[in-house]
Image (cartoon, rainbow, N blue to C red; front, side):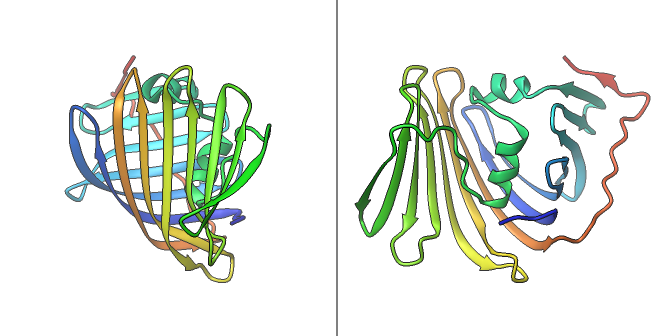
Length: 209
């Protein structure tokens, strides 16, 4: 899917070794520019997030503080490489390509599996054998023992712009953080409708390090 503008609602369930939480969010994105999220819990805004090409901004409404960082924040927190293009493609349900070295193809359980491996990172893609839609992506750094798996389902045609997977299951695992599981269900999806993006850090909030 290629979209100049994207917006949606989403219900998210998050679980790691320390907590299990559910929340809802409004998401807005302008291609190659900004990703904006308004996170609510029990109907009350808990956080506001803005991601640009080189920076991440997070306002914590509950603790009245904020974070300004680069993508190293995500890399340190989740032990995975990250950049704006990767997050944009994950949001749209598009393939994320890390390496194209040593490509191979196989079949398993009525799925086509495409693989590439550069010696450090291996990425695999499962395509549904009947529809050729992307059902799963898997990225693994074997030496560092880090792995990211993204399962996609519930494809629906969005206003003729393309097929969008409304249901996602994301699993992250590494030695540093253990296992993290995130389930996402998207709704009220709009493509190429410009939206306002407002992000202002209150003067009395303190910066969190």
